[in-house]
Image (cartoon, rainbow, N blue to C red; front, side, top):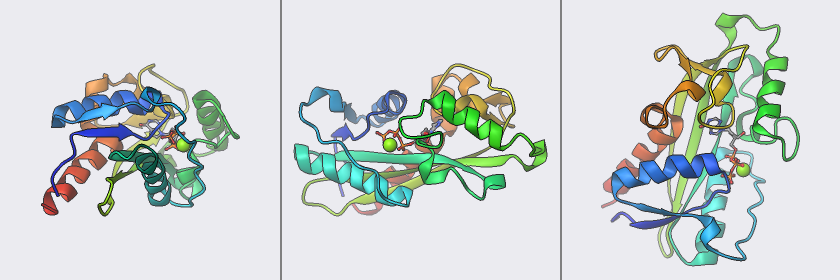
Length: 200
Ligand SMILES: O=c1nc[nH]c2c1ncn2[C@H]1C[C@H](O)[C@@H](COP(=O)(O)OP(=O)(O)OP(=O)(O)O)O1
Ligand SMILES: [Mg+2]
């Protein structure tokens, strides 16, 4: 399958959009913002897997605009919480919760959990939907540890409390280009590219 050149980013998350713009630029792709269009339907994320939600985001937007679209569904899996909040990460502290409310709730739930049991991973599933083609799905993850004090101001979401031992920094302390080298989203993007090349 040849690669698309112009792809709509089927997300309302500004943090994701920034990351995708750079990841896409490296591939020579152009990421188009949903803000460029009017009347775009809201996507109801009612799937119970990242795959289902990523596919739904891409399908709804691609169908509405008649253009290729990529959907990203992502979240944080914490081992001490049996994988929660997982696919429900965005609404962890309630519907329309802020990023800070979400990570504060996470720290509260983990307050009695010792450092060596605070392992976690970010997971990202991407779906590329192009009119008249089979969808292409990919995924990526990034392992880390949930710290008990936030640090850093870059990134978004749970980044301030997600510590990367190899970097000795939280995800929010990484420069954007560093995050884009190691993140779950960057890995999923690489895997999407590989999947497209295999279909050629
Ligand atoms: O790199 C990341 N760094 C920190 N946190 C992250 C990251 N990636 C996902 N996350 C968290 C944020 C949110 O709590 C949830 C995503 O939820 P998710 O539904 O996929 O995205 P969203 O609702 O913000 O935007 P949209 O659905 O329009 O793409 O996981
Ligand atoms: Mg969402």
